[in-house]
Image (cartoon, rainbow, N blue to C red; front, top):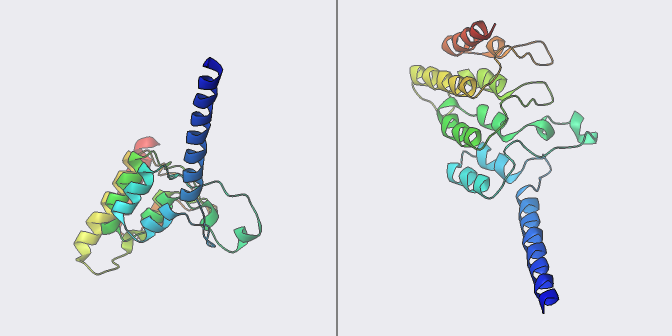
Length: 186
């Protein structure tokens, strides 16, 4: 009887492990652009979906992608959801970045071009997509940069072209915040 009970427990544990593995594999499926469901939820600015996917076990730092033939056609295989969020219009990026950072997204992760999320946020700092008051856009850009810096982003990191995030910043306040952080660390 004890052997049967032990066998049933082992079978139940294996079934639970297999079920969890199947769910994780489904959450991490990639499309032809190498994006996962979490990437698409971020790109489409679906905050509730991002939160649900994180709770469901989606990899906030992306799924490792072997170097292959597609690497030359797109930067997406190395882009983490944090990069995608940082590229959004600044006013929409903050809540998504907060969710990803709370889930331990790696601010030091780089894409194929050696850029971190801070580089992406700096480059997007001039984006007023969807309109909006320029002063509000600048304030939101600065908030995005500050959020990434508070999470530990390295303002002195340079990409594969030797550019720092401050070099890419379109707004003076965002660039100033990055340069101030560089000075504080230097």
